[in-house]
Amino acid sequence: MTYQIALCDDETAELDKTKELLNAYEKKHPGTDFMIERFVSAGELLYMVEEKSYAPDMIFMDIFMPGKDGMNTCLGMEAAKKLRDMGSRANLFFLTTSKEYALEAFDVDASQYLIKPVAEDKITYVLDRFLVEKEERDKYILLKIEGRIAKVAVKDIIYCEARGKIQCMYLADDREHLLRMTMTELYEMLSDYREFVRIGVAFIVNMEYIDSLNSQDICLTDGKKIYLPRGAYKTLKELYFRYYCGEE
Image (cartoon, rainbow, N blue to C red; front, side):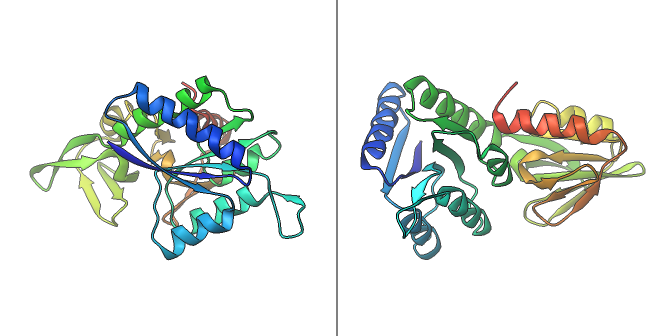
């Protein structure tokens, strides 16, 4: 399968090294084809995404790139926020010499921090994880909807809400499905996928669609706000950080 990969770094030596590591991985994994584009500034990448409809599957981006005055600024993080505002769902990997901005990376849904100099085993780890999760995102579940058996893509499920004995499933394309089953039965179907978390007795949420969370509520990318039961925040935050960091 072919994947579009964007490399964004103001240092050409770093671009060369990252591309070399990606090419080495590609050679070891027949059937994996990387289409790699190099960008020496965040502005170039943003232009391609906004004006040329460039939609990479993965972005490897340096956090620190010099601004117009030549000073080190966090342009990579700013560019990441703009990419998310544009609707980019690319897996974002930050290349950095410091973990100082880890919490901000949480806000832009970055997939991983890679500390420079990037080692081959680290690149292998993030690529293996990306390919496995890509396969998981392409999985389906079978549900009985309006008297018929229907196939629903797991990646399209934003959240499910209990309405008495009926469960309402909300999808990314604005469709809604009413399911005659218990919330426990539905969660058993979805619990094999690590992106799903149960919140209280009334909600199941796909963490891919969490935009922000605090001790009172979570906000989803479709604008839905879900209020958290008392004591739920600590566990949810830990689960989301583990999911975000790729931990089991």
